[in-house]
Length: 141
Image (cartoon, rainbow, N blue to C red; front, side, top):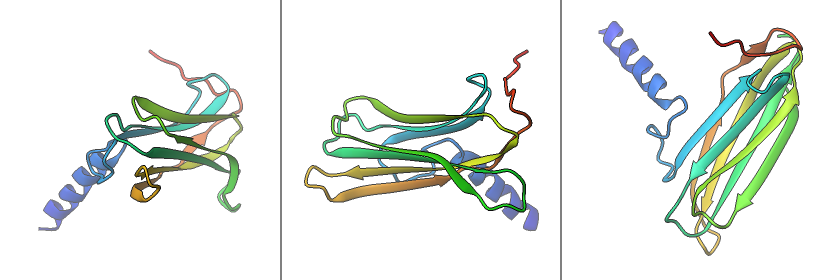
């Protein structure tokens, strides 16, 4: 019985990662936290496609860093942007130079009706990535 419960929890967790399938947020959404994809930088970003809706969409990204496990997390960069024309995919992305440290991000989506009332909110606290050195580059192959 415990194995079946554990398996169900793992499947639900896998479906929730990077996917809008496990959310009640009415738009298609996505996020990423990477290092080295853009050589020498840690990048964090989120996006949403609310095509066919009226109102506004606010996207927020906050990138946090800590140099070792004894130090508290501190905000390295943050960005927020509100879009009033929702006719296509909208995104916010930020980047900071790589350093040997741990990074995580907090992503937020807020959809508002034309009158300003909040229709839906969604928040993702990403997992932690560890950047091994300041010379971060993704090697493919």
